[in-house]
Length: 436
Image 1: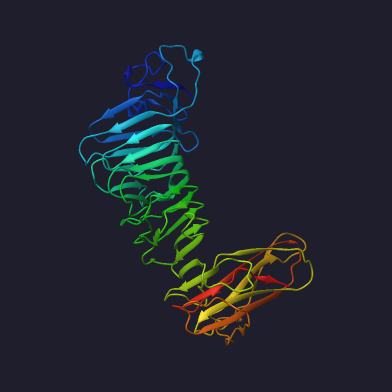
Image 2 (image 1 turned 30 degrees about the vertical axis):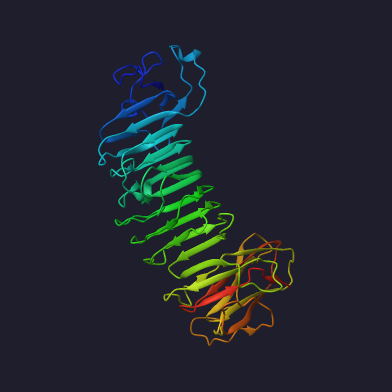
C-alpha cells in the first residue's frame, strides 16, 4: 500500500503525488493508484471542471483505493511530520452544461469529500462491477433546474455492485431528487436536503435490475413522496428508523411479481404515524390507529389489505409479533383477534402462524399454523369473538379470532404472524396476541 497526496492549489497530475508535489485532480489520482493505495486530500482541495467527469478507481473488492480528506499540511513536505487529521471540506465540482454528469466507478472508499454535478451522478454503470463507499460526504446534483437522478448499477452486473452512503447528505438544488438503484444500496445516517419540493426518492427505473435498498437512520423530512416504481422483476426497498415528512405518501404502483416489496420499519415524522408499512405483490400492511381492540395493550392494529393475487399458498403476511415463552414441554395456545367490515373469515382465508423452539436437543425452529390442513381441505369459519373494538367507519363489524396450540421444548421467542389469503379484502389484526 502506498500513500499519496492531493491538493488542487499547487497540484499536478504529472507530479509524484507527495506532500510537496501533490496531484491535482481526483480522477488523475485514481488513474495512478493501485489496489489498497491511499490518497490524502487536503481539506482545501477544490477542483472544478466544465465537462463530464469520470473517476475510475483501480481498487479491488478486498483492497479498495482510499480517498481521505485531512487537515491541510501547508508547506510541509515530509509525510512523517504531517499530522493526518481526518476532516471534511475537499470538493470536486463539475459546472457548465446540463448534460454534464459525474461518473464514479470501481472499488473505492471516500471520506469527507463534497461532490457537485450539473445533472446526474452515475455509480457503477459502465458495465463493470464495483463497491463504492461514501463516508461523511455530500452529493449535490441538479444545479440547473432539472430533475436529478442518481443512477446506481446496471442490470447486467447488479449482482456484483454495491453503493454505500454513511452519514452522507444528498442535495438537489432544483426540481426533484430521484434515486435509481439497480444494484445494492446501503445508506446509514445522513439525509436529503431540498430547496424545492421533493416528489420522489426511490424509483426502479425502466431498464430492469435487482435493486436491494436498505436505508437506516436517514432524515427524509424534506421528501414528500417515497416512490417505488416497479417495472423491474425483483426488488426489496426498506426504510428503517427514518424521519419522515408529515403527510408523506408511500406509492408503490403495481408490483410485477412476488419478488418485489417495499417496507417502512419504525419510521415516523413525530406527527404523522407511519411506524411500519409494507407493500408487496400480495397487498399492503400498515398500522391503523383508529380500529383498535378495547382491551389491547397496543395503540394500533395491523391493517392488512390483500391484492387480487393473494392465494392460500401465497398469503399476505402481517408484521411479525414477538412474545417471550418460558414454558417447556407443555402445550400453550396463542390467540389473535381480528376485525372486518361484513366479512366472515374461514381458516382457509385467515390464520396465524407461530414459530417456536420445537426441539429440546437443539435450537431448531418449528412452525405451528391455525390454517386448514391443506389446499384441498374443507374450510371452517373462525370462532366468533366477544371482544370490543373501535369500529369507526365500519358498517357491519365482524369480530373473530384465530388460535393455534403447540408445545415448545425450549424457552425462547415465539414469532407470531397473521396471514390473509382472501383476495381484495381488508382486515384489522390486534398485534397484542395472548399466550396461555
